[in-house]
Image (cartoon, rainbow, N blue to C red; front, side):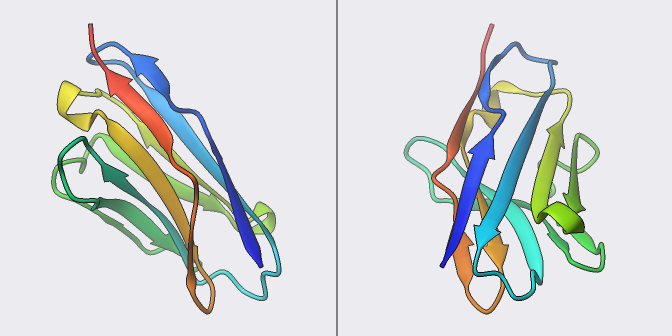
Amino acid sequence: QVQLVESGGGLVQPGGSLRLSCAASGSIFRVNAMGWYRQAPGRERELVAYISSSGITNYSDSVKGRFTISMDNAKNTVYLRMNNLKPEDTAVYYCYVFTTTRTWGQGTPVTVSS
């Protein structure tokens, strides 16, 4: 069984920055990819970014140039650096790890407001 622990969410003013972290533990044979989705109130969950174990990344158009995803393979931890945050980035952010199946974290809220 795989567990994920997320941290780093909170309240930030527009234009500010946050860094989210997500550590995977448990019965992990090999991590193929990790990533982040987000879900705003009244909206569907959407992909934010993902990174493969080889370092290939992909971002949604709405965060390109502002967010950076990275992964520490030795720690099975994924990070999401979020710069120039906007009110529309407000959402609950969920990380996931893809081994043989996808496991989700519990979510961490991010609120961008003045």
